[in-house]
Image (tube, rainbow, N blue to C red):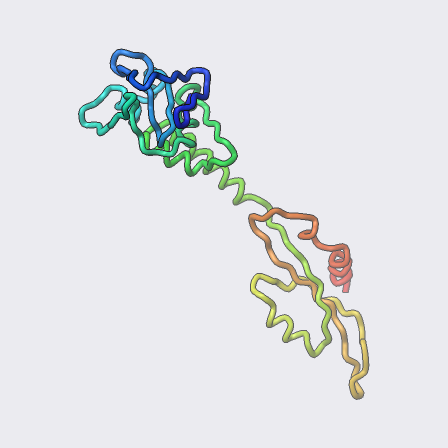
Length: 218
């Protein structure tokens, strides 16, 4: 539960009067001021991981630098948007992130609070995500270029970076130059596309498919 700038959200939240302060040592409830947003939770929740910063905070360890605001809430200079998911993980053991939050950002917070099981969980999620990205089938975009025999060498040698020659299809002589016929060709080239949103336009066109099939029979 969190209260932002004095507002209360969440069924567990309580807002004390301006002069009321929490006695954290005697109460089972602990109030936290994380980046200007208030969270109210139980000591039991914060003590889930005995190696964590939050566990030490509840124990009021003398070597832990922990200031309090005027209401007695512990001051923590971190992003409150990420603290909500961290706190919920301590409550029920599941990591739930809103769409505008990244796993990398959650990992930063988990490492700051030194919650070992959460660190392990997020690293596994990131590794799984990257593995899926790595094994995504490579997509290609195709182009069909028309050229004459005398232009063929120059065209192939000056193709842009990433473009690769796929197929050359002769379509016969187009015209006479002097006493010689000038042959004309269709050249099929392709380029790999990585980590993009693919539409149907990235697939080989019907014309390119027909030309490739025709070229394979020549």
